Image (tube, rainbow, N blue to C red; front, side):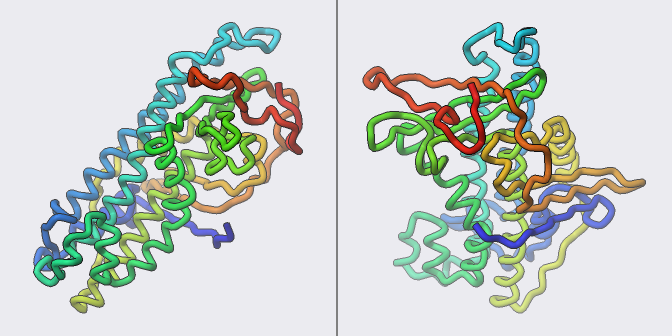
Length: 348
């Protein structure tokens, strides 16, 4: 993916809140330009608030279970570098469940943004044929919503390449999230991979998500990218709303400066600071998102940027790896990530 780097900055002094920027605009939508119908059954601010509420809870749960799991694993590493407990602990299973919930809510958030856009369409002006369309995105295409293509283009990677394959696998292909972590003394790097069955009948990392079937995702990289795209999607939503209102009503949408949901997003960034950007070996060469949270005198701010390449020491030598898997009661072979020879060195 060749994408120009984008920097998103939110400031408490300038914006009133560190939460995604759409909150500053949705409250300012004129009531006579919004409509309730099958594709938008709440006020657009209500749609977005409920969507953010679910994201806030699921991000927070991932952070909580990550810290809980990391604490247990640190106490489980013996002097010789081995693990006192050979199997992944219950805390890791809770972490995987919270990650799955987050994945679902991230994809639902995209649908909620389509519902926000749909709220600007007067149902009386829509043809009966178009109103038979069930999916909001397709409905917006049918009614020729202004700048919809631009919105889709701005979120294309996140929707189609990042979150989409995970959700489709989990919902429609009997895929599962499996835990995996690297460790060496107190450098413990937690992650996961999407398990799928291959055309050879051997389950392992999904070829649709992990292209080489020999890799996984670190939570440190994954959660930063997810946070970045929540904000990227918010900016794309605002751009699209502005264009639509300008096109349909010659109206210029302006932001307010309230503190909506600031405390909840500030708490998420504070939790993220406890998760260093320590990634898996193949991710050392992949683009990462950076999230910088700071407190200047009298002003908190957050800056989210993507894509960046890591400029850091190489992946540590001598790292050990631990993973989990379950056979399906039929097959007797399984492919674990990172065990096949690769240029990233040997793990054991």
